[in-house]
Length: 179
Image (cartoon, rainbow, N blue to C red; front, top):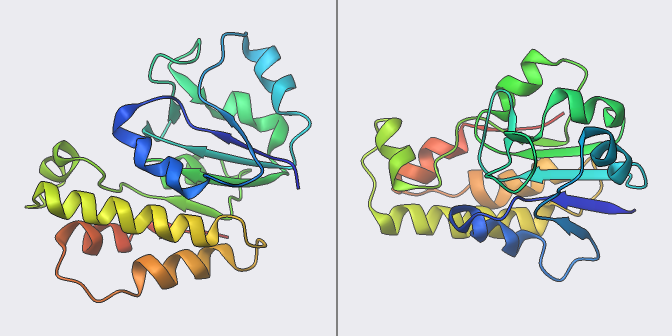
C-alpha cells in the first residue's frame, strides 16, 4: 500500500521518525506548493499518516509548509476515504469537529515536551518525557504498518497496557483512539 508520512521538520517531534524508519514510505517534511498542488501530491497514496504538533484545527506546518497547517480539513477532505492516521495534540477534536474523517489511530492532548506537561498540570521530569516519547515511538513502530483492524490494539498493547509510575505515560494512555 502506497503510504505518505506528513511530518513537518521539527526537532521537538523528531523522536516520531523512529516509528517509520526502515519502512517503504514517502516522507513529506516540507512543501512549497499551493493547496491544490498539495492535494494533488497526496492523490497517489492510499494511506496518509500525519504527525507532529497540532491543534483542533489540524497539523501545524511549523513553518515548513505555506499555511499555518500542513494538514487541515480543507486540504484533507478530498482524501477522507483513504486510510488515515493522525498523531498530533488534539487531533481527537479535529476528528470530532469534522466527522467525515475516520482515522485508524488518532490522539488527544498528548504530552511530548516539558512545556506541555506544565500546561496540563503534570509534574514530570525530562526523564519522564523522554521515556514516554521513546515508548510511544516504539509502540507506533510496532503497530503503524499493521492492517487497519490491528493498529490501535497493537499501539495500546505496547503503550497503554504498561503498568508504570511515569506520570506522562499515565496521562497519555487515556488519549489514544481509533475507529
